[in-house]
Every structure is written in C-alpha cells, then in structure tokens.
Image (cartoon, rainbow, N blue to C red):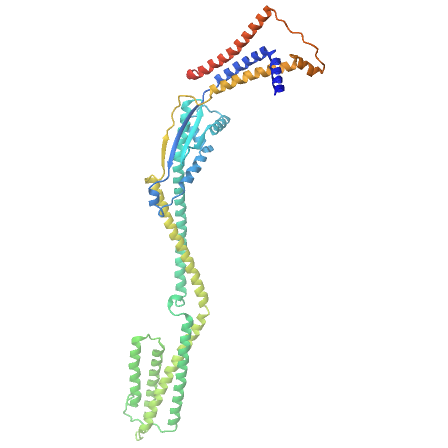
Length: 512
C-alpha cells in the first residue's frame, strides 16, 4: 500500500512541474467546450398521452350478431406502424415541414430525422400511449405530435372502415356468384326430374319392388290363362259333332242366342263400371272391349248360319245351348286373360329395361341434390355474414365502439427539453481538468526528473550516498508563493467561470 501511495505521490510531483501547461490546456479545453455547449440549439419536446377504451357496452350486446375484430390487437399494431413511411409523409404535409424542402435528398433526410426523433411508447397501463417528439422549434414539435395523434385516431378507425367496406364488397361478389350457381343447380335438378319422370326416388316404391309386383301379377295372369284355356278346350270337345240349331228366317240377330246376348250385356255393364275407376288403356278395360267385340262377331256369325238352314230344322236341345253359353264365357275369359298377360308382359319388359338405369339415375340425382344443398348452404352463410358485416358497419358508424381519450393534449413547450447544458457543462469542466492533468503527466514522462533519493536509486541501481537540499532565498520563496497563488487563482477562476456559466443556464434560459 505504501508502495502504491509513493508512486502516486511521485507522479503528482512529476506532473506538478508542468502544472502551467496543464492549467493552460484545461482552460482552453474548458472554454471551447463551454462555447460549444452554449451554442448547441435548444430542442423542445412536445408530447401527448391518449387512452384507447375498447371496453364498450355495445360489444357484449352485439356478440354473435356483428363482426367484432380484436380491437386491442389492431390498436397495438397501429401504434407500432405509426412511424411508417406513408404516415411520416402525412406528418410532413400536416405539420408544414416540407415548405423549405426543395430536393428529394432533403426530403429523405427529413423523414429519417423524424423517424429517429419520434417516440411512441406505452405509458404504464394497457391501451395508454404516449407520443413525443423533439425539435428546435416548439411549434413544429407541437404540430408533429398533433399530426401523429390525428393519424393514430383516424387511422385506427379508418382502417377498420376500409376493412369493413372491402369485406362487404367481397361478400356481395361472392353472393352474386353463388346465386348464379344456386340458380343453375335448381334448373339442373328440374331438368333432370323432367327427363327422368317416373324414375325418381321420391316417386314412391322403387323400381325393384314395382318390378317384383309386376312379375307376381304376370305369373298369376298366366296361371289363370292356362286354366281358362283348358276349360275352353274341354267344352269344345263336348260339343264337337253336334248339329247346329236352325234359326227361323224372321229372327233378328239379338234373338239368335239369348244367353250370348245376356253375356254381352253383362260385359258392357262391367265395362261401364271399370271406366269409372280406370282409363281406356287399363288392361281390364282393353280386355273387356276385345271380348265384347268377339262376342258380337260370334253372334252375327251364328245369325248368318241359322239363316242358311232350312226353316223346318229343329232347334237344338237345351243342353247344347248351355254348352255353347259356357264355351262363349270361356272364350271371353281366355281373351281377357290373354290381353292381361300381354299387358303385364309389356310392363315387365319395359320395367326391367328401365331398372338397369335406375342406379345411375339415382346416383346422378343424388349428386345434383348434394351440389344444390352445398350451394344453398354457402349462399345462406354468405347472406348471414353480409348481414353481420352490415351490422358491424352500422355499429362503427353510429356507435362509439372504440373511445379515444386524449389525456394530455400536445402543447407548445416553454422550456427546452434538450440539451441538458448543466450536465454537459459539468462534464466539459471535469474533462478539461482531467485533460490538463493528463497533459502534465505526459510531459513529465517525456522529460523525467528525480524528486527523491529512492527514485534515483531505483532507476540507476546505484547507492545514493547523500542529497544536497535546495535552499530558497526569500525572493525565491516569495516568487514561489506568488506562483502558487496565481495557480490557485487560475484554478478557482476556472471553477468560478464554470459556476457562472451553469448559473446563466439556470437563471437565464431564454438567452440560449
């Protein structure tokens, strides 16, 4: 420890020999620094604090009815993008900072200075922002902050309105497109139903059950036809070889065979009853008409045959008449069943041919219906979203969903915010004193001297036998005291000058 102290004292004694160089350098450096600090232009800071209230009472009431974006996120993004280049250009125009701008380079430099000096930060709580700016002119600082505040408030709401308008335009275009698709799908379903009438799934029983029912009816009709044919053949075999009954010449056609006439009348009544329930194309009606025609032709033929027989012929016996009536009945039944079998056969063939295309028809119809349902669902969803967007736009236009509260409006500052001259002057003074000491120390190292026996012994490595002390005369002592007094006065003057400069900054700010 003593070694360190001795070295420090030795360095101070060595630097003391060049104290006047250090004092002069300190004064020169201090004066230059003070002048530079005092010539620095004042920078005035204007600031504003704004609170964004997103907790509106209308938001929970419109929940589920209107589109509600994340307002907190939008405000946060807007605060970070406030110093973007387009916004800075708006600030330049709104604050009239471009009046003296003549070249593009000057404009770029101005925009760079604005971007560096503008400060936007959160003021300690959610959605509370502080906007600050420094400029050499207090009015310009206030105008810049006011422009930023206006862009921040109007930009947040304007962007939301632009987003809402663009969303509604997009929804209108999509609704129009889906309306056309829905109309095309409806027309496609209608045309498909028209082309495949009777083959649609909603027409009742499917084709396979209908085909099975027709097959059962066809088999039943064939069985009945076979039975009727066998009964007819049996009656024919009984009446084969018997004489015909001779009809009197004055008998008319209807009186030839009363049983045949009764059969014809009965079939006509049955035909009238069938016409009440079925159309003319029904198999039973077609068969009945065919049987009546055949019986009438048979009656006409019998009348012609009886006219060609002698008048003296004897009428057949009653047994023969009954057999002929039975034969006529069987012929009519066979004819009706034959027509029924033919009709059911035609239906079965056409139904079976159509049944092969039923799966493809049902698949195509299902695809058309599915496309129609998808288009309809999308169309209805788009309508609901457009209504939500409309409600959202009305809510933004007519209600205060986001409330901007300017807590501290920007104003023209009366006191400069920078530079801090007192601090800078203190730093310059301390730096000047330190620089003077460093200069004196460096000079002492360039021109070293020995102030103690120890220094001489350490440097030369030789033993020091003795020291010759300096004896100062009274005149020399007086001169040394004056030198010390002048040096102290210079140092005190430096400190007093520093105090005066700092005091002038504190008490006379308008002079600077």
